[in-house]
Length: 455
Image: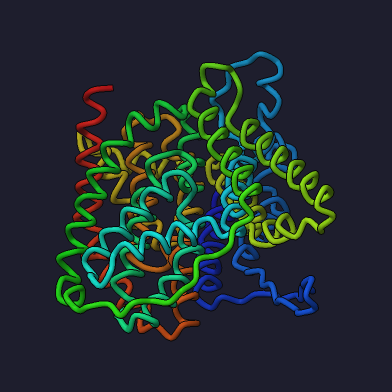
């Protein structure tokens, strides 16, 4: 009983403190000296500290042993090399997969590839805001499928703010459009969101089985989200655009080609990973390492410093590393002491389980952020059907609409827009998010019911 109470108290306090730090955004900064002599300040968020302290306390009070924690973190790490088929969850594998895919995307973004795509798309819009709105939604949706929602938010938000300022148009519709598209189509592939990776891995879902189940719900949810978005901002989109004079970035074509080959090659191998017997984490790790080696060779030939690698490393969200590992330890203590099984039983309400899990996951995301929620739900859905797992994934993505707390992407988005003096505060973001998110959530879960009938 002591261990159970201690686990609950520590978990609740860690979640509350995490939300508080996400809202207050404390960070540490350090200077990076650039090649031209200028100094760039790099900040590291401290939102992971409560989970770190919570994990230390969990181990200190004996709610979970160090041996059990280490064994769970590294479970079946090398099973692939022993010829075993493994479906068990392993946070280390998930983190390797996430960081490797993030590095491939950030590398291309540092080269200006995504900005070039955005500029070409925006130029095709001419003076029509409605055409621009549709193009932005489509481009963000497609890019998110093949990268991740966080990368798209970091890439597009500053550009949207600058473009709207130059064109003298209201940036709010485009910021909301970008955010909704990114966090809807992040459901399409496992790699689109860390929550997808965590929850899908907890149930042993393969890359192809995941796509087969989530393609229709994502497309249906995306359609409903777009229709609500367009209706919501129809008056603002009627005003004309003043032409922007932004200059297209000059790309390092050889390195862009190298980056694209690695990203596309990685995605293709992920699709067939279950057939060739190679785990997804190992595939992404190999491509990330290979890209780094190719970049070093290219830099050596050109007699240049590998600045692109340094910038990619600095932009990678390493704060997620201690956060996910420590939250896993906290949730493992809850599972060991019977808490997650009690929550799982409470959520069982007959035939409406998928809807219940989707709604609960969306609401829980806005209480503790969607990454801690996914860590918690990975234990709750462990012995459930695929429908509940997919529904929780849907809730973790669409739940990001409701408040900025729902996902780190929301916090990053508001932080960036405040720097450009965009009039988008917590309440305004939440008002738009609820109007768009509720019908999108129900449409996506409805699409899930249809998809599961045919697979």
